[in-house]
Image (cartoon, rainbow, N blue to C red; front, side, top):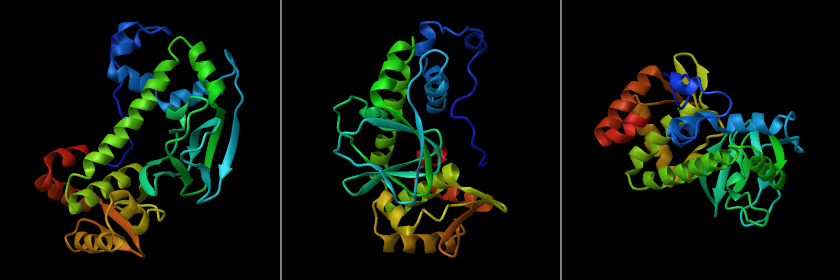
Length: 260
């Protein structure tokens, strides 16, 4: 259940048969865009020195270190190799970023201020590239700008999902968040997964938009109802918990339940 399946299935045989230069019409297929121009593929292209070499540097961030601040102009973009970051805006968490995700690309213009503050929640290793050189390489590549399109689309999609979550009740909002965090960042354990300890009540409450006290109360309710387990302030979700949680979400909002 918790295997990290690819977001998209393998493209069709016709598309697989296309050579290095994809057909013009294939580039307008959503699944092709997601498959061919993912952030992981972008990292491979930026590290590839065979056709167009750009400067790159691997750097390590300590826990709680700030990568860059919102409303400030910075010259670099990054791709995460390992670790988890939080994206903040005006003191509120808008989302989380981890392995193979791009940081700072949607603010790629040289004199453009960052819209977010990026903070390391764990020790984080990133590849650093200058925005100017990345843009030059994307322009050099025949299909390079599709990487930029894909990144902007994913960024906007994340903001939209976060905004839509604010329209539902706090119980549904928290439960959906816990399940999605578990699916994406959960660490395997016996019979299920556990959320990394970095996802404290304070972090979760800020992201969900409810008080820490209410998060603690709802977590106690979820434990009582067999939705989650909690040990030493760490949240565990077993296969049995997952089934109960999805059943509960189905009674609240069938659409949200189907996305878990």
